[in-house]
Amino acid sequence: MLEGALEFLAEAQLDNAGHSITYYRGGLSVVIPATVGETLFESTDQQGFAISAISVDFLIEPGLLVISGSKVEPSADDVIVLQVGSRLLTHKITSFADSPTFEYTDSFRTRMCIHTKKTLEADA
Image (cartoon, rainbow, N blue to C red; front, side, top):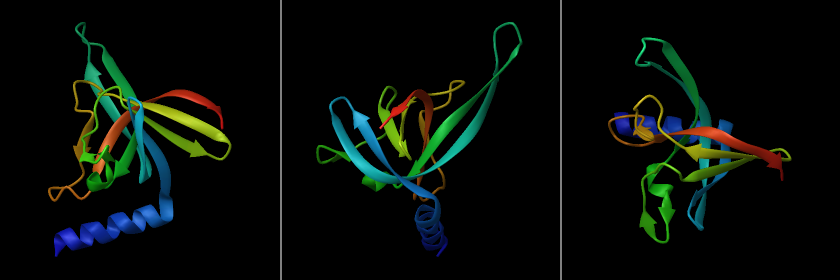
């Protein structure tokens, strides 16, 4: 029952705040729906200074991340491109503060949150 409720909420989120993104791995790509968010990462360097970074996050349905017929997990250096109006925003998948490049949003793994940093913004 809880898993069904989580799936319903995720679909409603995509319907109301979703975007189509293009996920690239090397020369291969797939277009999938995603919701955009952000995460604040904080850590401390070797001298004890606080370091913080904000990740641009893409929440997707894991089963849709299929490249060349195989389900894949996000990997560092893969790229996501999001078109917003006449702008193309390119994001590199990366980890922050020794965190993974992605994480599941719930124990049922209905959505995954992919962490990225924006690397390029250009006209479409």
